[in-house]
Image (cartoon, helix red, strand yellow):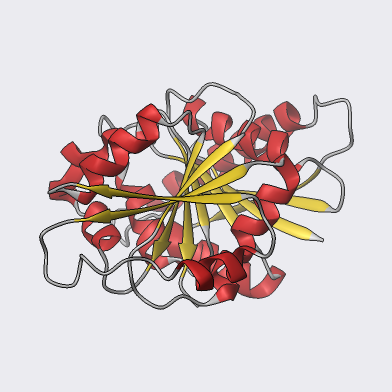
Length: 267
């Protein structure tokens, strides 16, 4: 049984992410959890109890509406609803621990965010324990045939790739393993292709090496020119991906305005 968490702020982007998850993972042996967080700051204001009840009711009503949308599919969808006051990353980690969740699928831009990559999404990518798929606001449904897996030259753990292997087997995609060589010290070392091939366990894949001064920009170009439908990256404690989600790096997020992104956790 696969358990997928769907954070939602009831925006169109969150609905696109839910659609992406349902289209890719289906409903057989899959359980979905709609999660809405409405954190309320402590206050001495006597009106706070009424405000708390109002926000709680709005959250529950919104979750019911989203559930009804998901249940319009012809096949049966198992959907649970979770309304919480906890910050979203903390809430998702708690649900993952209690329910044994496997994956988070969410939109990149919240209802009130004008940024290309919403603050909630970047925080979740950095602080949650699960692999995450982010779905951009302008994503349009299409079959996933080619996945760009970006690799550095550090050692890998085969368990890191398990969510990717599951995704590939569901859609039958080919994986293009990409490594960018820059002028940075140590960057000229290539990927351990034998180790990557072993970790991909027979999945159809190929390797490409590109040269560029900026890893993100180069990956963006590879994705745009390679008929790619999804990008996968490994999140390490110290990697270029960590800087990618920093607020000052919003201008670098062109890579993620059109393509879903799978963030894998290094085991």
